[in-house]
Image (cartoon, rainbow over the protein chains, first blue to last red):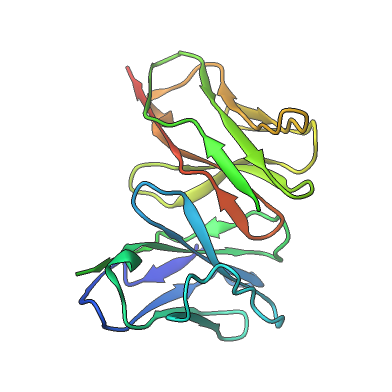
Length: 114
Length: 109
């Protein structure tokens, strides 16, 4: 079956612009996660959606970052007024029902802020 | 807070050599422990996991044992292949995951 998909695969933007990154999780997965990986660093947790519960936003680095999820499907991560330090690979993952279940990762969106 | 420390790479081995990639952690409570792998040009995928102390996770010839006393989850394989060349990430968590920085493994024929 189809895995987690993300779009765009690459995005180059100018400092100060807003960007939207999209994630399509595996169908039927109730949990969805966003992480980011900056060069030479491990993955950093950003935000977690589980069913209809309020999202866990504890990893968002600033109020310029926000994310939405429509039901148990598509999620969009928005970065407003991008800065150069936002340059990273943004990874989305989904799992069947959260907890410590296996997370399936998408290929990522590589964001470069000039 | 939670954190994961992995040995820095790259780790360079010849085919059929024994592999150990060290991973230690600090955590609140007793989270599950994971090894994820990223092959060249591919996405991150789960390699193995262990959910409680003394559990051994295993897959594709790789093994790791959840050691509470040493707060470690070292990855081992008895005989590596060229196809094992990848970046390996140790992680811990209950739902959201905390990852190490990754260790690149390069296996030559």
